[in-house]
Each structure stands twice: as C-alpha cells, then as structure tokens.
View (cartoon, rainbow, N blue to C red):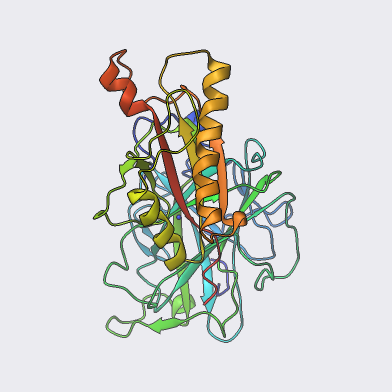
Length: 367
C-alpha cells in the first residue's frame, strides 16, 4: 500500500477512434494492477498514462483479487463507470498540500480555433472521510515532469468548482463536461486539483467510521472514461434557440429565425433572436461564443463554405456593433457538410440553412 494524501457520457454513436485520449477508460495495463502499482522509475501507471509529479496515482481492475480490485479495493467500494478499470488519485490532504495527477499524451495535437468537447467522470472513494469542491484539467503543449508531490502551480485550463464541497450526489459517478476552443498545439492533458489547501473547500464526512487510516484526513477520487472529441466529428445535436428556452454553457443552439437574402450574407431585419443572444452575452460576461454557418446542398462546396462563413460573420458583426467585445466571438463556416436533415426537399433545405451558436464558459472558475 502506498503512503500519501493527495465539462456528457460519450454518445453511443461516436466511435472510439474519434476520442483523442488513449486508453480512455484505463482498461489496458502492463500487468494486472495492484495498489500501489505505479512504476517509480518511469512514473508509468497504465498504457498511455503516467504521473507528472512525484505523486503515485493508482490503477484498479476487476482482474485483481486484492487491494486493486473492482469493485472492492483499499480506497472503497465502487464499480467502474464502464468497462473493467479506473484510476484513483489523492486530490486533497489536510495541511500538507499533497496531490496526485494523471497525465496522458493525446493522439494528436489540438488545432487552433477548433472546438473540442472534453469530458471525464470522477467519483468520491467511499472510504474518504473528506470531500472537496473542485477538480480540473490542464492542457499543455509539453509534458510535465517534476519531482515534488505537491500542487502543480499552473492555472488549469478547465476547473470545475461546485457550490459546496459535499453534495447529495457524492458517492456516485459525476461528469465534468466542457466545450473548449483550442489555442493550438495542446498535446498533453493532466487531471487533478490545481489549487492549494487554502483555496480548496473541504468537508468532513462524519457519519461513517474510519475504514482506511490513509483516507482519514484526505480526499480521494476515482477517475474513468476520459475523452477529448472534435465537436465537428460528433453528430449534430443542436437545440432550438427560442425566446423562452433556457440557455446553458457548453451547448449548441440553432438560430432558426436568423434570415439572409437568397445566396447572400446580408441579414434581413428579423432580429428577435439576435436581441436575445445579445442580452445573454451581456448578462454572462465570462461566456464566449462560436458562430457556425451552414447552408443547404444547392451549389458548389466552395461557394457554400464561403457563404456559410460570411453569414456567421454577419451575425458576429451585429453583436460587435452592439457592444460585444470581438475577442468573445469566433466565426466559422461548415457549408453543406453537416445537414440536420439529409433529404433533398425544400423543407429539409430550409432547416439546413442556419447559423448555430455554441456557448462556452471561457474562464476558469478559480474560486
């Protein structure tokens, strides 16, 4: 046993090959894992995963019959979110800032200005006598390799911070899922808690006896099913954008009533939805948006791509002219590549001629 104290389920129609995370469910291992099971010389944990620091994360699998078993292991009792494996890390320890992290090299670098959906599942180990309020991800262009086992002093790319450290759903698998606009060149992902003890809110769970002394003053999370997906590779699931609809970050909505002159990018005077979009951006100053233009199947691919880009840009210009900072707006065109309906009818073509808006919470929740 080692000593230490430490934002959508991938849809079934999405193939594994589109996930940029190798060994995303911690199913593949060098040897059937035991705890501790990290290679202290290479810091390797499982195929595709290692420790970026001196911390020693754990690997669990149902093949093990001892302390690294699933569902029964030294840190608690938990079935995997899917498959036969998961990993485990200390994310907080009282007074000593001990941390563990999971690092992986993505299958390919992220491309500048592309939108990616980043997800993973975590679960509070049942023998932890403390819970904390946060978990995060760092995306970087180079691997981290430091000797210390303390907090990585880097601002996370994504930080999920809850209102309270202990929630009713604690003890179940919880999902972190976030849309992300790539800066370009990101190749490594690190999962863990990037905040020191002073900034991390913790909660003592006092209604159960201590069953594991090493977790009496610590918080330990299981991690499973990590994914980084190019949003353009995911089948369209856009939501309607209406005056009464509730708008959430990390979702994509169809601006159905944004109208243009035929074959042109000039906006017609039908601005009800644009006014709503404007009010949302003014009310949520930390949100960015990506505007994506789409056309029907009439015309050449080159013409439709240019037209769709121009139409998305027209919506962006409207927002900028009405006080929205241009740095909060990205525009792109998909032409006729991603129809919502594939029929060659005029009704289907009308549905496919659209501008979509994706809301992205652009700043880390560094509470």
